[in-house]
Image (cartoon, helix red, strand yellow):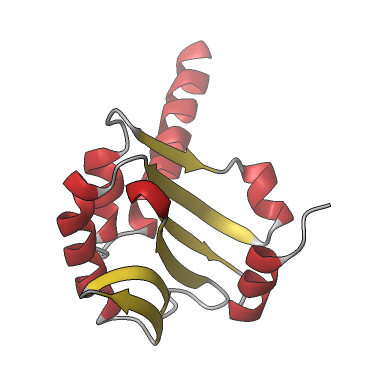
Length: 149
């Protein structure tokens, strides 16, 4: 009996891991999270299921760089490739470099919207975010710019 339970748990974990991996499948930014997520000076965040449900999301991943310079060429290359698939693009470019970008990707499944957000900050910092879920573009903008009490 214990073997059946153990096997069932392993199968469920593998299915859950495959679902997360599939979420960014076909996107170049997935390599940024995989390659640099555990580097020194880099912080990667993935929200828990409870937090995701609060914001109508099925996946939220962010990666922040204290010093983006060593990674910027790779990130820019990945964003350029993924933006070709985007159905909505808003960017701020200065000196030929993307300072901030908002990319809405086509849905893979009905009612699952996908977004890539990128922003460089002061002193060479940067953050890359991937979000998918039921929230639409207006919900995302409201969430990003809502006042904190």
